[in-house]
Image (cartoon, rainbow, N blue to C red):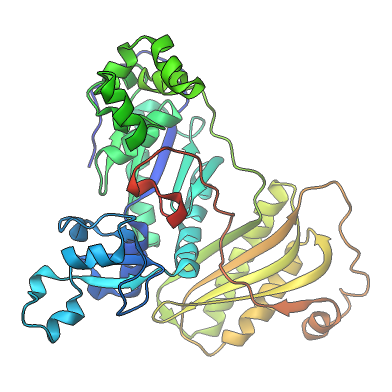
Length: 426
């Protein structure tokens, strides 16, 4: 859906910022694993066990929200609004059409899916700020001009859905705060573009709670001051707002006016770099799998070289039907930069899955080192065979989640959907 506002061609050089926000991400991941859950009311619970009533709602699908289920709601309360479908089998008082499915949070799996999305984002933009497991800002100023943003954003959405199987809402604006609001404006599966010169007009009619960094508590206080919309906040006396909320008051007043000069900056150095690729259909063809891993290894090594990153660990990810994720890695004696070594180690690790049907493969380098220290000496290693090399200088170990970066969440005074304790996108 293209929510583009009427364009204003003013030649402004403003930055082009995309905010990518995955729709009901945990539920979307569960539907990847269980396609039969598509279009069904689905609740994913944190601290929830199958058949129990404790825990809290981490994510409620849009179908479940129609029954009143919300994020952060106790599971016991959610069950009153939306009984379990399985319970309807034995309880004639429960209408199966008024019941839903419940699943337990599986962060390792969600992070593996998120890493696929993040790989696409990093492939799309030079500057990416990852906010949480399923939310990120992209600075694409040098990639696309304002006249082509709609096509660019739609292509990005299509690529995420086609390659990963989950749906993203995207907002594009000249500021980070407006881009974030835009991505949430037309969910699910939204695409809203706010061009330079239009930000304040876009924000003005919105409820004040939609202003960036304004959550339910702040919104209630603002309403008690007669401030109901973003436009009201923009027109308010900034000194009055600052007196009530301190320095943060001046900040939200500026956001309501469309003023936000923050650049998109990555959150620290990446902890790892990875690339993944899926086969059209699961394959047991050993050479096809090896060819794909060779290509991924070369790409990952080049990305590390371009970022001046040495690495101490080389790993692979293998996904077998239906969606079982396997990760293997080997540690080196010290940080290195060696494309041939990345390929060699990745192929060695892949050998374990030579006879398996494989849906997807990935290669990762981790334990990155951005210092100026020289790479570790590997004297004598080059003369050893792959098998001997592995026993001589590499330690094999299993990695948990195959994620490209640590998840870092920004502070945002939000309602239940922004509960960062649940690890969900805001």
